[in-house]
Length: 311
Image 1 (tube, rainbow, N blue to C red):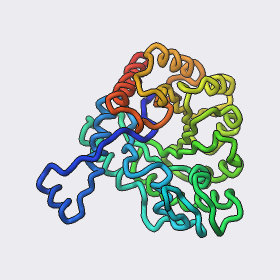
Image 2: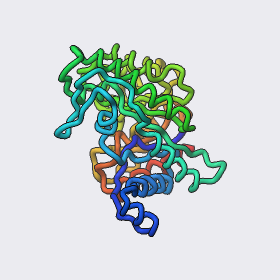
Image 3: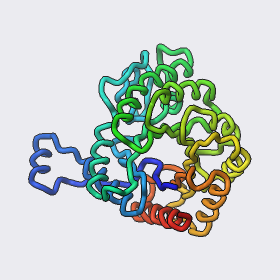
């Protein structure tokens, strides 16, 4: 059993403190986000998390990709598809992953079973978060082209030695997305990739869970603390998971307070009864960015302590 985070984390941008950074700031080459990433990785490690993230600090989950992928423009805080979607001319997330991994390696012992995950926003969510202005007559075609574009990002992350690569697809639970198209897009992204692939879908999964567990991924990550329906779905479909690992969201990220220890422990016990401890990754329901930082850390500490009880 591992502990992880879904992705985003509270942070603050700090002014440069050291002479070198101050000089880089003067010449326009100072990167303020690196200090934030370092602080996030260390905070997660200190809280006892096994698989950390870089905190997704540079932009929101949509803009991070649509600002950098040909075929999109970003205007008035929204993404618009204006031409055929093509691969980005550069890697979008790998520099931050590499930096975060270096921070992690400098703060753990050689034999510690710790690591970092790579995270991308999935093609269905990106397309359904955007307005189609031209070229595409339907969203399904745009999703497939975007999957082919994002495939290069997945291949780049695959070379970095991360624990797993997470594809965020929150829109799948809305009922708006053609699940056959979504599944085809995920297959484009995951086929032939050596690193385990996860899909994160939040919300009520009543209408999609039986199909979701057949997607070509190794890890299904969902929310269970804030959604009682999903736990029943897990219990009813436990025999059909085909050795998939479950990312078990057991911290309620809608609450800016520390969860009740016994309630979380009870949830985890139910998950263990269904899939066993070796097929579980304990994490929050969703990202933690909207939390107060001290609350987010205490939530993760609670998660780590519960894992220790069961291990």
